[in-house]
Length: 324
Image (cartoon, rainbow, N blue to C red):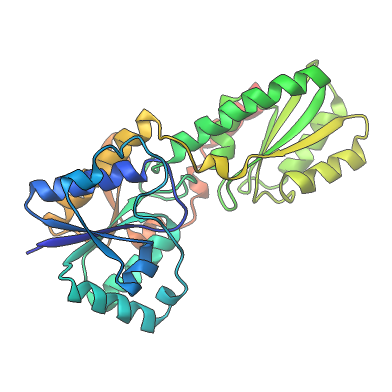
């Protein structure tokens, strides 16, 4: 019998997290379950930073970016001693189950914690990187790629005015999902992603041919690409193609902020609602996601596996054709 649920956000913030918190709180209250907000993720769990959440607590937050529960990374939770403190805090506050909103690190911690102490946990994919298996989209991804496309549209204006080659770096240390989607959406001439090896050489071959009769060129570079990010790639381009007026723009943390799109608000609401009902149905140790508009549950160990398979070969072929 679950009487009190703890909900927290962990890892990097993502637009839509507040909408998800709202859905968790209101669904739980509908089922006469108390909700405790755990501030600053696992670190707050260890330190007992808990706040009681009511319907009014989550009013007027669906449109806000960031997370009202704050977020942090916790080295202490990686230790058995830290997890024991977290467990003691949960038990002292009568928390029977937890809803973890985050990404790889969040779910890794939740899996270990549940195995050690048996507290049921359901994960909700909240990360702009879209780098989790078991869901078509993660909360925040749609907002992030729209932010990138808006920025690239503005950059292209000045690039065309000066006949420049712009290398635009986007987030994605281990995943090229943001680069791929925003590159397609902005009509980039090339997209460099960590999952695709040798893509820098393909770019150099294209620049060497010089067949594109355009006044500007936009190249989207994921920060984790083997080329060394946009600055590393720019040095190589300048060395091999001094005739190009090459510039770099790193979009950075603007990709994390901002009001969530309608898609992210809907996704977050559905996943938050489903997570609570999953706990009531006895589910645990899994991430809830949406695939082909159907709710699916993926064990934490599967959700955090290598996501290179999410790069559809047909999409990669399309990118090559449309940018040629």
